[in-house]
Amino acid sequence: MTNSGFLNALIGLSAGIGHWFLAGIAQRLASRGLARFFGGGSLATLLANAALEELLRIALIGAAAYTLTRHTELTVSRRTALLYAFALLAGWAFGSMENLSYLLAFPSSDIFWRLGYSLPIHLNAGILYAIALFPPSPKGGSGRRSAAGRALRAAAALCLGIAWHGAFNAFASLGFFSGLPALGSALNALAFLALALLAEHHFVSIGAFHGRTRA
Image (cartoon, rainbow, N blue to C red; front, side, top):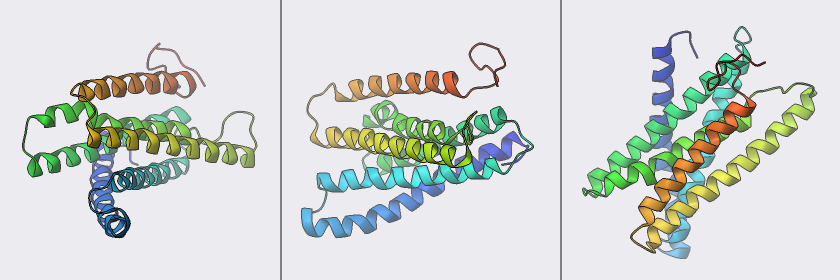
């Protein structure tokens, strides 16, 4: 991370695009193995794709969080804000690349529903992982206890991220009813609001919602 907002944004966007490319490679390799047991285009492949994307995402955000812990000259609030911005931009870049590839492969008006059904999944997961990984050392906790708590939060967040992403993939493939895109978009919006409130309640030090300073 740098002192330049433009460069920090560029880093986040580049990380999201890199994540998309790596996920595509990992998914193609995994699909070959799964096809032997379940056949091509199976539900198991869709669930594996979601798991691979989320594993790479939390690794990416974890690397960013570790990098920020080295910048001790920055306040915790500044590092937390940088991590949130990184997670959002990386998630947006990933989702945008995914939607663009979908549009090129299947040109239709469905792309508009993907903006609410698919794209927010990546944004929400990124924020969820950022919340789980920061701040690095809560007040009153020893180093080992803090690290253990953070590992448990990260594991729980990863499980939730995979479950949410996998469920959306599964329901989209099965296509139970025509209102699914609208329902999924609404659920994603509610999840985003819940994550925003959780982030503000626990970690925002500069008072993004209330204009107050909190250590």
